[in-house]
Length: 188
Image (cartoon, rainbow, N blue to C red):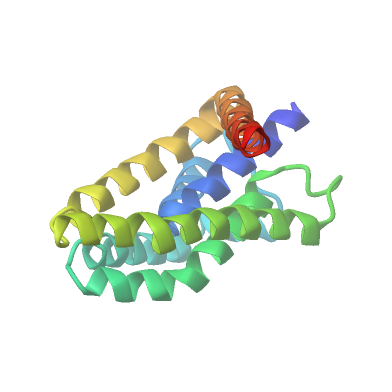
């Protein structure tokens, strides 16, 4: 169903905001070995053994770089450019509605989603973890991000309905928080 493909794209691009290479690797491997994802040109290039090898190599580099204190901050600066681009590719490659949605809109949506999640992670979450744990909490948080990125990528492909439910819940929660703050401000 076309609508579910959009939720798959949203889930994969959100996952790219946490780890640039995991969702691309999931897309590549699932497209190569299963019928769960059918990539159209030019995105079918992701199933090339060269691309899969490069993604495995880059995943390993990001995995280890993100676990080393001080290096993880440099990695986040570099990933500020990589993760949104990976989100754009993940969204456009997995949407399967590229014929119905203009490619620029598809790429822009993925860029915005992955970039937003990366910005929250790099600007708010990671500095707070570093400050409150003297850097000790960065490694467990990084491992958690990798696990969440992997699970979110797989779930986005297998159960896009679940991504739709999560999207609705998060949107409802944000609206609730905003209304609550607005009501508190009006009461003062």
